[in-house]
Image (cartoon, rainbow, N blue to C red; front, side, top):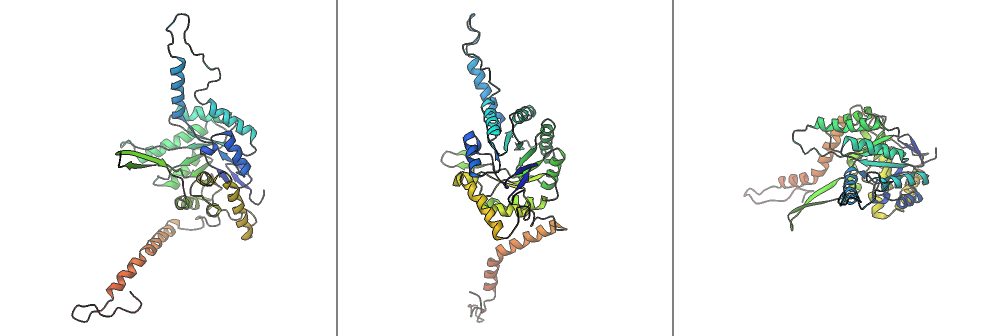
Length: 359
């Protein structure tokens, strides 16, 4: 294994930086450009079950239009022999990329139904995907559904898929679980080979001019690194599955931080959308230079160097860090309050000379 060599989901990689699912990975040419820029692997843009259902509905509406209206023509639109439930184009792109690219192509699936998760997972495997990323996002809007039931739904989907495919399965997760470590261990028991921390979701807002809800998927920035960094550090060495950092990357600095915390790979999309596909080359070069300047022999020599598993009572450590950070934030305000309190008076109630060292 080279200096930068890494492993993710049991797959050997030339280095630990991969391209996340995004518009850049929706086409063969986009994935080819990322390979040329030095990506260790690419996650193809997600296959959404709803989009497939919509395509099926449109296909049926066109092919069945005026069906049976004339005794000599059951339909005026011939069926396409290679039409495959609205997924044909996506599958063809994946098959072409998997065959032509030298780097692993990981498929991404975002389903809604049990049949959808399973059927499309099998199709993606058969098309040549090196691994499968389940892009899971269940919004529990039903007030009668408990958190335990929601988590069980995630676990059931993972178990359902992993029992029917032979390629590694990783799960891209939202951050909103009350006992996240326990939940990840459940996913591991259900057959997951890895987890990606975290999904970056649609953000709701209100347009005051039109009085309508609106929103967008904001690109992540280094300000978003803290929560995934914390959980990667806490999970490293405590679970066997692969850990991928999935948000907050803009430069090699964030890549190094994630590796020190224990990440197996660092996945980025926002930085590539901001700076261009060629930024992948910059990220890899920056990581290599940082290792050389620090005289580290390899990525393996820094991975997990600052994880949280060496702490006997990690909850006490995290609690103390929390208290310390709040104290640092409020300290300037506390100093100003103390300064005002030590002002003396001349007995008549008028302020006297201010204490030395305060203002």
